[in-house]
Amino acid sequence: MSDNITEPLDQEKLLEILNALNTKMSEMIQVNGIRYTLLEKRIQKLEQFQREYETQQEHDRDRS
Image 1: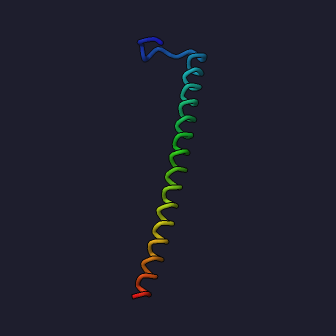
Image 2: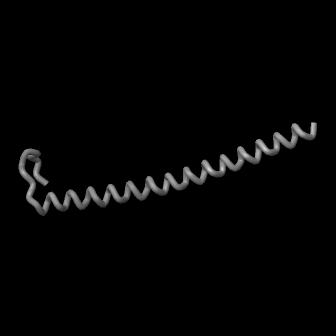
Image 3: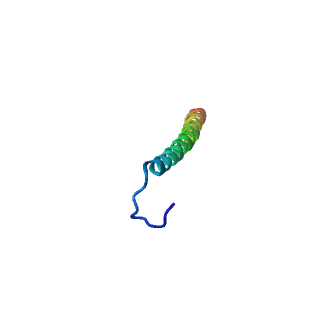
């Protein structure tokens, strides 16, 4: 790659850069999707725990 930033890029070089960018963006989207799925599962587990805890608290109050 040329050191002169104002030098116009030829089509082949521009296509190579765009393909690399596209690949990187796809990887980032995939990683973010995996993170989102894991976060969603954690939230579901926390919500389930909260429901079970609240139910147990209600049972404990009813017994006393």
